[in-house]
Image 1 (spheres, rainbow, N blue to C red):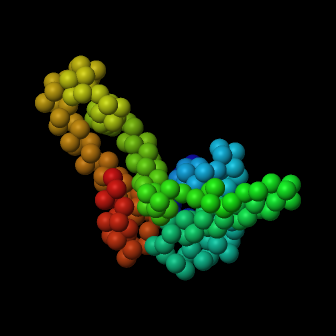
Image 2: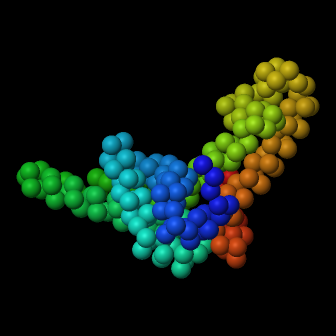
Image 3: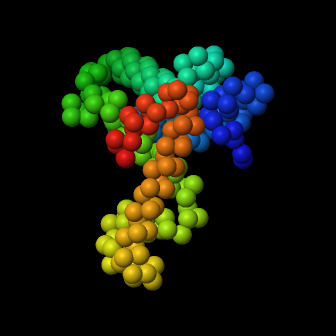
Length: 208
């Protein structure tokens, strides 16, 4: 399925094609939200429920209209909704368990102090961007060298696997990293307003 180049242009077309917009938002941004919920101490099933609820709310027209008014803050909006849903989930679970006369503390759900919530979300967001960029570059013959390096292969092992010299592999990896970086920047630009994109790119590329 083809989508507009910009996520914002898709959001603006929500009334004309709501299902298309929903699919775009969920397909591109579900993974970091699910992983963020898991790292807050939720089970796999509970994280699935949280991710589903986040996107039920995100895909409501009033949210999309608000997102349009806050162009360039799409990542921040998704994080805010995710935090709110997780908080509501914890309160519900706490209430249910108290009704069963079981004691529980909200501290049971706390994230370790060395894993700040927003920094963690940003890292998961960047991981998702890298995966999307790699998928877009999957037909690039040089990207295979970078994939093998990311799997922990040595330069010699990569050269043997590709039937190339170590010097060729070094060049392939260097050029592939540049292409990957440009693709990530393009992905960031697709969900950021033009005037906000440079700041968003600078903020996230430090984590790549």
